Image (tube, rainbow, N blue to C red; front, side, top):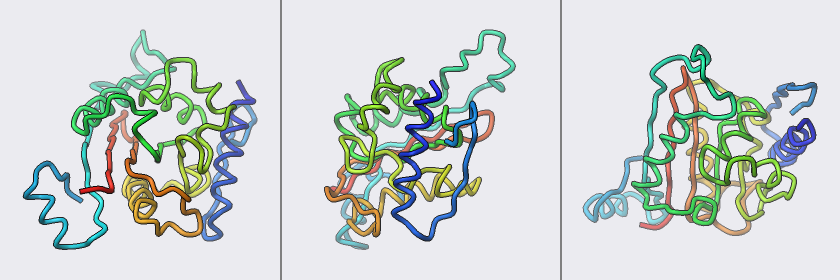
Length: 212
């Protein structure tokens, strides 16, 4: 498993290196460094009055664990139920059936390397146990089939607690406008997902789309 963490750490640092203004935060584990939702035509017309390249929110999922999960005797340390619940809400609103195929860019809450690995599965981007193989295959790399954390993620870009979620959404917003220099994706993404965790945990998942 440490080799998987190492692969993810390298990915984040490579993507972080595209931006000379970012700071760097390393998180050791096993000694490895590792707008408003447009829901109808009226709101869409309002958005067009502000900008011709506006980005709309297609879905918002919010879930809160009823208790500190670490205190549960049967707690599964390889699963975040609140992430899965929030993702389900957002996908239903955005009418997304196959997240891996329908989403182009993901800003994922990787406060720890293991959290990134587990979140791939809890967000439905792959089946349980498949995340490590996808990491090794490079499928989440910058410009690959599903780019994750174009800015290097929380461990490389930084984690301003309370502001990380907004920054994730802003990163997708700029990528969808084709203005996220110097790490702009060659192919402008159409559908993006921002995933943020905090609290006991409380999880928010937001789906953005660059077409009205």
